[in-house]
Length: 108
Image: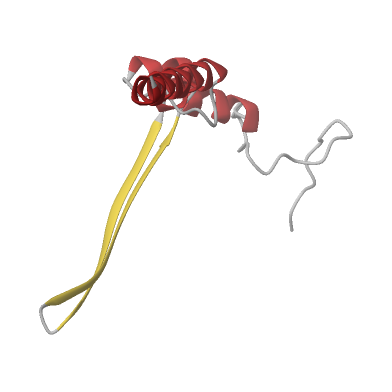
């Protein structure tokens, strides 16, 4: 026979065991602070012929932690960074000005 435990009116947390103060927010904070790397390779061969290779790399970390690890690809991606988008526009503008000067040089 089991004895019901007093819960203070709240349902039991699925993420905390008895005597543990960890909850989902604590676990998420620890994961983002420390970072988690999951890596794996999947290869499918048929008669020693490689048909498919899938390399999986997953990093879960906070932005600050990722920068500490040297991961900052989002800063140079024009789709994600307005700063990178501005430099892309500047490069395109310089290329267009060079082509206009070249065309004007041919017609003069």
